[in-house]
Length: 310
View 1 (cartoon, one colour):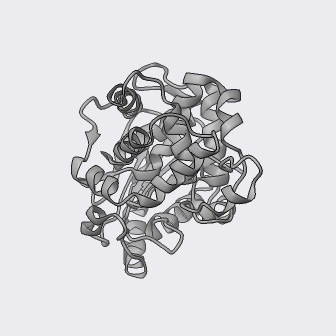
View 2 (spheres, helix red, strand yellow):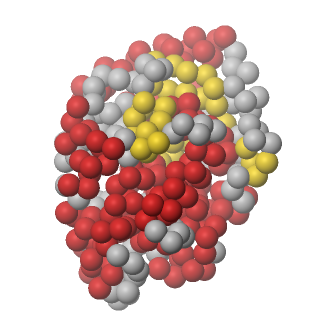
């Protein structure tokens, strides 16, 4: 249980970082995300005792966007095993933007460097088992509902359609990957599933619950059972540290030391050993695609309470 002093300090910190939103911009390449209010700041911390503590604009929901990459990676490894997955997707960070095709053209195998960039994430999505695209997406949705402990979680149809209609870069990546025998299956099907997984909608408390499971080596204190194997939980957390915050990953590892994954909606998933989860939402982004307020909030939480894993 969080102390009264911690709660008081968190409320103060939220208001201290809120003005930083004016230095960022909401994602505008997905029309539906343009409507986001850049001043919103919401944060939840899920603690070992099973309580979700909410701060800031607590009633806000949002689409998780690239946070979904962590979760589909876990499901793909569960479906096929580590060896199969990483024959097709690498394990190395990249200095290129998450949507870039350049590095694919420079490698002999045209293999995406990691699962957190779009090329890698599209390849991972194509691996999810199912007889139809509906069945594949339902498996992703069921997995996320279980992790977040809410059967009512679904995807935002307007955001999904907006992404599908403006996803030319991802479609180009997918065709390039298929031409080089990295990605298998129908491109339209993969794009449909991918845009829907990015459009799954939830609250910061849901994110924090997912972070709790990953931080607790895949064991859910709410379900009292293992939802993700300890090895898979370890793998995805490692990618969160090395690649989860795009080109800010190394800097955030040094300054905060909290395994994290961001999405261009302004969402951030954080996880700490022993089963502490952090969910943050603030839609104003920096030039690298991360929440301006969210990054500062992670740094302050870590530094104020000595939470770095290093």
